[in-house]
Image (cartoon, rainbow, N blue to C red; front, side):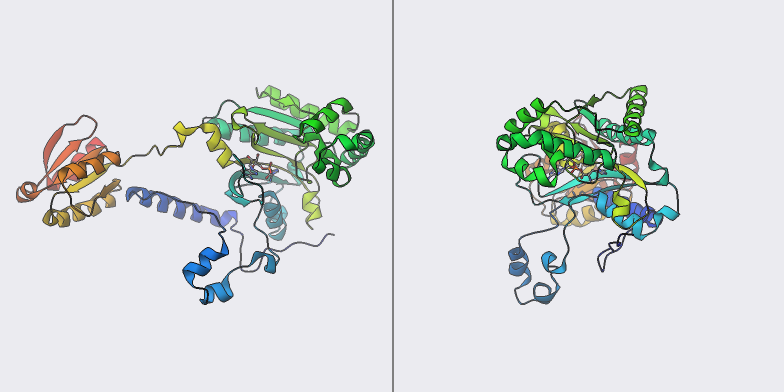
Length: 418
Ligand code: HAM
């Protein structure tokens, strides 16, 4: 049995029993931030070391002793999610809990790539893996593919293409690789430098090289599926039928091999022309050996990952803009009314009414400009007169109508309007 790879020291997996609590805490925090008009920001999980030594102090304990130096520790930032999910599946003996474990993840990934449009060194994936003794079924492949397509549709994406292929079993893959090497050997000089290197290590990868010269060579090779065994061929036929029965449109793409070594049988990729050179919105496939190779039981699995940045690029600018607006913007016209307005602001937030204020009371004109910018639905104005009469001016920003409301009634009135 292969040796298992343990979780790094000082870290833990958050398994499904606990995840509900995390989600509740996260969604509650998100809701409260929203009420207070705080927007989320996400910065990369790595920065130039100089940022920390300059800001925290070269001689501080953090910089001197506590900074995690990845290379020294034998650790790497994760380039994808599948290997970590499989490591966790093995380490937590999840195979003993159920015959099929279905997990999903949303998170940041890191690759030391040459950045370009749609290709970043830190990016985010929404992914899922279905692992276990019961996972070898073309219907599960169809489920996983449909799931990824439906997520994209739910996000509002339409113009994408689903490409599928089969690599066959591990044995088929090896045969295919051998055959390909025989076919490509005389063409070595016509392949790009990367592919000349791939020739020995992973000849299959030459099939989906984007280089024009390599594409021409491949086209001339006339690849067919003769390398597939009967079982793999039947499995793929069943998958295609299951997809067609579900009304899923797909293209069989015999050159689709995927860049990661672990795949066997089904592989798929979802592309969008609007993305340019880096056109994959997401991809996935089946892996029959990865779990056992990492020291786990001999079980199959299938999964996918969608790239969030690519999804956002494909959605285009109009969808990217923050669509949420504030409920109420408060205007205090002088220092005295600011104290009253601050009390009201907190009362509104306690009732989950999204509201904000400018703490430096300025002229009515500049405050109205700020209110406009905040896109608040209503503006509440507190000046000397209003305080004297225990009233507040309520302006509907859509209609422009303004009315006076008794201060004690304002939350009730707003609630009726929101
Ligand atoms: P992958 O094809 O390497 O597969 O990545 C999946 C998706 O992540 C890509 O289609 C793309 O949308 C996005 N992506 C990858 N690299 C970058 C990058 N540098 N910048 C922006 N987006 C990127 C996997 O990661 C496999 N783990 C998928 C899988 C799950 N297979 C089985 N289970």
